[in-house]
Amino acid sequence: MAMRLLSPSTPPPHLPSPGAKPLASAATALSSSSYFSLRLRRARAAAAAGAAAAGGPERDGGRFEGEAMGGAFDRGLAEIAKKVPLFEPATDGELAAAAGERPLPINLELWLYRIKVHTRKFEFPEAEKLLDKCISFWPEDGRPYVALGKLYSKQSRYDKARAVYERGCQATQGENPYIWQCWAVLESKGGNIRRARELFDAATVADAKHIAAWHGWAILEIKQGNIKKARNLLGKALKYCGGNEYIYQTLALLEAKAERFEQARTLFQQATQSNPKSCASWLAWAQVEMRAGNNTMARQLFEKAVQASPKNRFSWHVWALFEANEGNIDKARKLLKIGHAVNPRDPVILQSLALLEYNYSSANVARVLFRKASQIDPRHQPVWIAWGWMEWKEGNARTARALYQRALSVNSTNECAARCLQAWGVLEQRAGNYTAARRLLRSSLSINSQSEVTWMTWAALEEEQGDPVRAEEIRNLYFQQRIEVVDDASWVMGFLDIIDPALDSVKKLLNLDQPSGPARRDTVKSTAEPSPPTTRSSAAESSETSAPGGSGTSGLSSNDAGNSGSEAVEASGSDFDLDGFVKKRLALDPAELDAVLEGSDPRGVVSQRRKRRLPRKPLPLLPVP
Image (cartoon, rainbow, N blue to C red; front, side, top):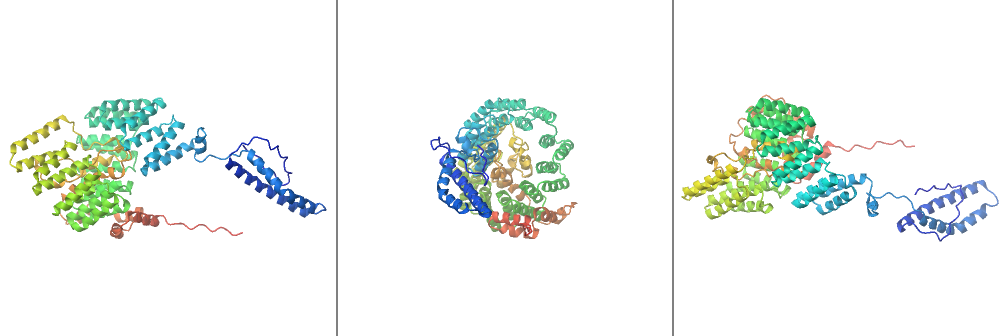
């Protein structure tokens, strides 16, 4: 309730009777009392000063009377303040929520931001409480349902996530496509394909222009081998939503899979025209050109990718692996160092750099880099697996076993665990512990029964033990299972790779596809390489989404040509000034990359770079009156 403040010249009002009803709380009364007492003292001081200036016989008497009555008057005004409520805005809607009233809409935005912060800090109970509060006050808004469902999915509480999505669809009367889409993704991950199709269909009915639903549905059909249906869905997406970089990119990858490279180039051009800053489109196009054998064009596209997104970790990493495959080891090393300077908290780049140094420098340098990568993210399994593989190659079997065990302590049921068990089985096989090797290989196949390398390694073990009949049975069992299971093409993108659609196409470059025949069963290096994990909900983001880069051993180790061709490859017709670009766009001195790499604290590297890029400007001097 607003109140008009009295001017100093106005006489004090008449006091009401003390029997009036008290209204405000103790805190409001205290603040109101202090406020009006201060105003009253200022009024009396101004009145006394005016009377003194005017003079007169009543001057001393008035001052004495005011001093005598001041205490009583202050007490009376304090009683008024206790009875008059003042308006105080609620802090973040807390007071309104406590009173059962609906807070202002701005509080929904603030709470959703707080939820993001809590989720990043893995403070799931706090985020869940805020989401429940958002849903109770704004049941018609779909964002709290989506956020709560994803929160439950991160905690593997899938039944609760389904219940939240169902309640959200009922509360929004089925008109929110985002809830339908997230629910469809959840069912798709759980293997309920039929239900996922129904939910994707509901999302497109709720909003025909919701392009993520069309794209996710198309990816689902591609994974099921229904290419014609996927093309139809992508065509409808273009019809209802217009040109979109991800739709064009998926169509281009379909054409590349069919080896229609000209059509793929046309679609990639449309994708990059839709969004020239899309690093994912440039990277996917570059890898298609690599498949076509056009390495010069691929290098130019990698340059476009880093220009589109200078801080993108995938662009520097994949480009470095490409240069390593081409024999340009010095440039590959330099690109990885730039990628680490830009992303000092990414363990995958350090892992690839460690493998590069191991193949072309020394094991001690690689150990330092592996240790630093493991300190950055101790839960990133590919680092421990690659480190264990290197120690095994160096003859340190005991250290390799300890590192493999450390990788399994992080997670013993995912794809990386299957690769780790396979590599450990090879180690025991070479050490002569055949019983332990069989047990480890069986454990690996219990996680991933479609790994051809594991099956063929087991068959080779049986042949080595003089049992060719058992080896042939193992091979036949593998081929029978391969016939029963629909092949998941390695170039297909997962639904949540909309964030970075080039992620799964990196598999082709990194040679992550399982070998096509038993001729490569002795390639132990490929058995020790971690494979990319299945895509998780949006924010699987940090260590999990970077796992494809963690498999850089094959690309780095398959090339033993040395540095002889580096200069020739580097001078193969590109006018891109890498050093100048790094200085201008990233504020990095190429001569200091080694010093940045040797820095022990990644956060210190970030702060120093930001200091160079964003110097503090001095405040302007104000004129002195």
